[in-house]
Length: 389
Ligand SMILES: [Zn+2]
Image (cartoon, rainbow, N blue to C red):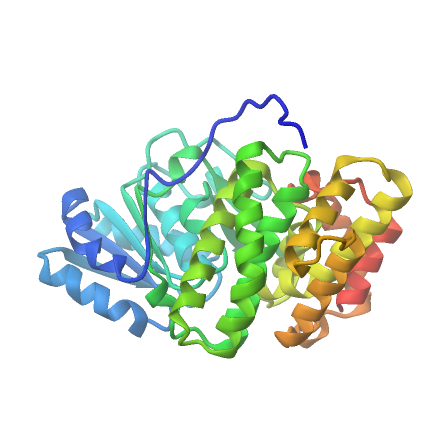
């Protein structure tokens, strides 16, 4: 396909260190950025304990903060108050997407006065974050969100039953350390759901209305590697080569979504996570095959000669390895992958048919839906979520 004219700014972390073992550079980098670090970790903190110990050995003062669920406004408010009292001048986040998002939100808020709600979009006052964030080092321990290179942090507000973002170019980490060895202990179900989130974050930007030639490169490389590596990492969690591939896939997904947007899967993931106790990756994994199927059928009917359908065909040929594969073959391949990875349906998380109208209404208004390659009709949106339940 001919190269289109393109104009874009490329958003990413200031510096990325990628590869097995790169976490060993964390203490030296941290000491060069600050003196007293707020160290944000998840509930499986044993993965982070080695790093926290190394930070202390390097002379860093440490204020620990455990984020054991997807971050809420209240959690961030408390964390910021704790970090202010401790005079932290650096934030280090070691964990999955929730921990990284909490770290990004805290690094941003600590540079500002006021409450998270002053700056949160949708449910807050949405004031711009104008000052540079505190220096932030992000080290993912899952291969899924790519949050280490994106410029927003998703916070939940249980009383509003929604998720909303703090968003600013200043939220990009100073350093992202993507060390696949940190993902070795990830349980099978998390390997599946986070890995499928990563794959979604490459498929949706590739067919997005905002795709550009640079994100296309990332998506094509990431989809190809993810298609091969994810089943391997699921079968054998100690397969470091597959884990390293998946860390790369996740990183590419973050770069792609930060620069090209997302689509219907993430349009539904936001209200699903707001209304039900369903982790982001699990929501994406459950919705992905049905959103692809409905999108491809809608494109066949209403935009059969458009570029998006051609892109779904390209994805299908990458996924299947078959040069004659159609867009529909790609949908079938993804459905098979989700079955192989034992992705549970949404009803496992308490989603019922009664919630469908509210989910459709909220998904239609979500920012991610704007990137979907075709405007979906209400009946099509209902079909996606009904089949995923
Ligand atoms: Zn996602």
